[in-house]
Image (cartoon, rainbow, N blue to C red):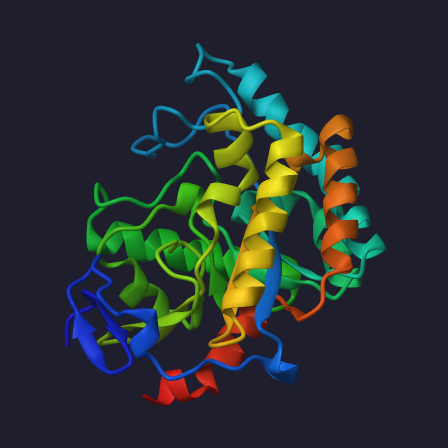
Length: 310
């Protein structure tokens, strides 16, 4: 079979990129402890290359700068450096203070050259997700299949060597994928995909190489999308997260929902933003009906559910 993936929701094969599976037609989803909401955080640790390799793809609005400047682009590079030197540890401390474990989405260059980031995440019991080679090397349909496979494989291998454990989850740089990506990742042993934003429950993507479970990420609440791109102020962002969690917990009483929030240390780890993050985590800690999970734990729980069996 081809590596071209097809979505499959509750046994109904769908065209790639379409999601007509209405939530009210699915079997009810139950999280551990019958909690209505699975809440998870992903922390993206990234390297911005001053001189990316020839052929590397980046979106024109890659956050952290104002478009690529003339070489050396120290402004954008140093913004990301801040995240790996300072911001990550501040964010990790705040999550730990409030009892949240996270998934570290780490790219290969960060994993290989920022060992303290890896050690801190592992000391806190975090899961690891592969996050490509760097934020300046995005997966896209501009790659042919052999190039993309080599990119994915080398990133996973380098992250596995640096972390001492082979990741089974993937989050692409800037959420980037081609039509082949889920199938190629399945063939490389990836079971959990964190690039899709089109649902409030996990779902399967099938290919000739096997199944990956897409755990949806709340793109509107991603700190980069909210603060950098959309210029949402911090107080409003905190309110948005709490409003989303409250509504999802309410809706999840019928069939469980998930809320996965992606944090970027170079942004949310700034001292003035981290103060708001502390307040948000304190408020979330006081919510009832919340299963504190990692995205990989959400994927595993979904695999054991009636929805996956259906």
